[in-house]
Length: 355
Image (cartoon, rainbow, N blue to C red; front, side):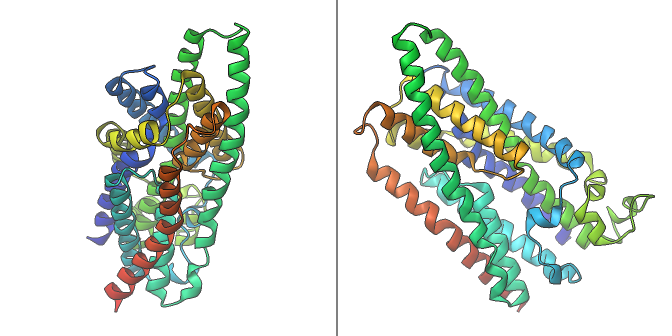
């Protein structure tokens, strides 16, 4: 029962992540009126879902370590009840944090909130605060994405403006290119973010159902039957039921279409006003960083964090007064406090549940 509860929670997480994290991919196209809002969100949903399905395939070929993705401590691998409870508490905490952020119109990262919540839950399950040390890692994308996005977008905005002033680049070309890059950002979000719920589901099925649903499918010529083997190679992914992968991808796409409007309003109307060339620069820099980090470095950057930095960079390249520093400061405060809050709530919920 706990196993399938975690599967259901992972599907809910994918929907929430789509609403909170993926919809920002088309923020600039909506604000600059390159695409109507409904068309843009539909476009983002389709590209996000396609990226998620492609992400599943890429995980299998890249032999991703599921233990490393989820951050499961070795001490929990032999404690299925504690592992399942910690996973459930971590996912519920992450979903709650993402919903609160969405309700307040604050762009948050699904990766950052979830990894912090899981680290806290694992620490609570083991009763060992030293397990909270991985939380420091989640602040890396908080810093790297916005800073590099800011610098790259600032430079691209100046370059695009220069080309436009010399009439080497028409407005129609900029609008078309912005549409393409927005789709690439949405695709990149799905490609990167689907790895986390997929990893959680496989860990749950392999760790809690070794004698059940998935265990009977994982013993083959390339498997030694151990949980460690399943979670350190693509063997567990190969046994993942296809319908679960499809539901995760579909939920992420549906969340993008249904719940994306609040984040769009914050980034596109409250933070700054963008021109078409600024929107192109922000989307292009975000797309380049997402693919560079996910494909070559195999390191997940938050599309939300990166896009915010890119939008600020493109805005300041045009005018120092174009950014609402009050809104930006509010967003930055949420970014700093959310991982700590998620870790604390994850720790407390797991500790109480297993007491």
